[in-house]
Image 1 (cartoon, one colour):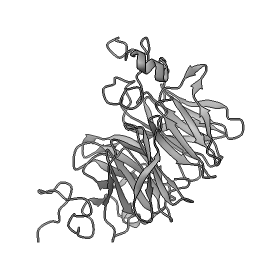
Image 2: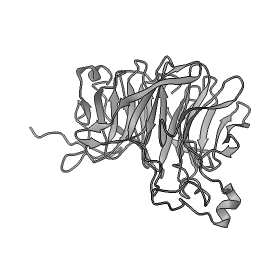
Image 3: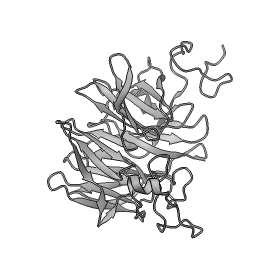
Image 4: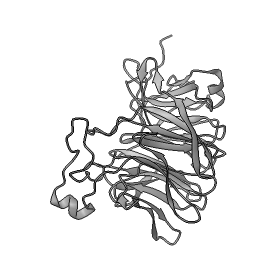
Length: 364
């Protein structure tokens, strides 16, 4: 009997509502450890839920509204994907090139904006509250991903991925130089008028205090260069931070393409260490966004060669236990649905889904 079509078969697997029925179990759901089979539902397959963006990011599930919110960093639009009928509509017509999003315990949307170099929270009355836009008198770089700690504090990464015209705006001349000693970017008058010309500062991972609103740097560029995705363990005692390379066309600070983990106590991080090296079958994969499930397993978007890219899953000890093979890399993901047991995966202009046998750690 011939093998069922998959991402790497010839011809390759087809996707979308007109694709042939896929066999079960799904050939692109791969267990590397027997325990992974307990996390996936054997009667579910990977599905293409929607295509229509340019570069989808920041998926965040709204439990009360029963919808998934998505950022399109290139179009500077936020979309809403409805649970009941999978319809997609514009949620916010101009989002200042938002990237990471999350809903806090009170259901308020928190967004990272590349274009305005800030982190904002949308209150229940519709007003926009700027949580952070500068540090020690200097503007932020381009806030990327965000997570809410169980104590209510808001943590976010601030690399320079958004300092391009495509995803926000370039840095001002005179900023940090690349490895050849050449200034990174110059600005034209229109960009300066819209966003101002700011020099890039060091990369940081920041924490916003839930009571005072004070912004504190909990990790530096020397500890985690080019920080990207961020996620807490379910109990908040550990934080995971991805170090990625520079964005398209950038020199950056030389991120190490690994996942780091630190212990969290009283709003500070200690014992920062390597969690996973993102090596897969001899290839260095590029991590991006990630989320944890209720058992502490880490589900991480992975970029790399066809046949390896998609999602990789680590147990709490940092051992890769399974992966989801997709036709392209995944920029970010989250758990959603009324039971938080559906994995939503952003991959360039497409949104993929998978029914799983676990739940995302709240808030997701």
